[in-house]
Length: 274
Image 1 (cartoon, rainbow, N blue to C red):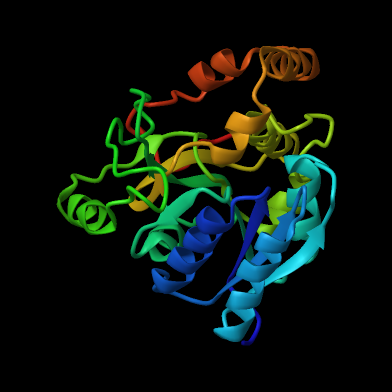
Image 2: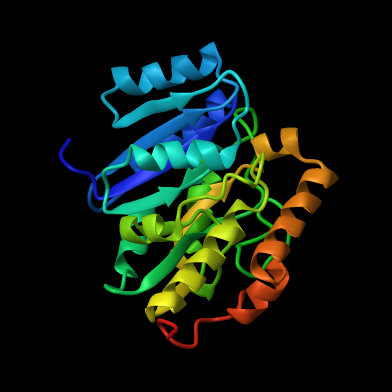
């Protein structure tokens, strides 16, 4: 494979079936350009090795670029993957998604040269009512109950619309990723990383007078099996610490930041001016 258009970053932690599904769906359902997949394995085990070896045997452009027997956290894992990336665009996603057909073409079609964009596919969630997501729509959360055919049929018939959003896996130009500084490794084990990265893009864009945009791309879709790794690490203390860190660092809450960009609403203008 030549130089990829998109470098996909996938931190994982002992979820072999979900990792396999995420990577294979991403590569099978991409329609434009080329994609490489960089994987970092926290709490690394033999099952993850077996999945990655399966990618190699099948000739898929997916490789393990880092591993640890400990949990180094999401931010560290993502930053290691990003450092090994060669693509023009960086796309971070978790290890518990199914990427729907055309996910890449839809994201690339919204790219505006010169703008600092935080694009994200719109996630189909099993629960919840967040207006930035398509929810609730449950198609299973694992190998025993995943209804792939039903999901694909639903996606084909779904009314797809863009929305202002910083929810979901971020897709950014490689230059924007570097300028924003990647993920803040002070958020451990990983709660708070996405909103922190999003607001840092807005802040840095303002510093240089560049237009910026947060957009959930309606016809780029992912199905979320449901925070498989997050559920193992979730605690009130970790979530609270992330919220405190964010507010101390930026002077606003994550909710206030979302309000400031009109989150969940239709995009009024294509690219927001600084």
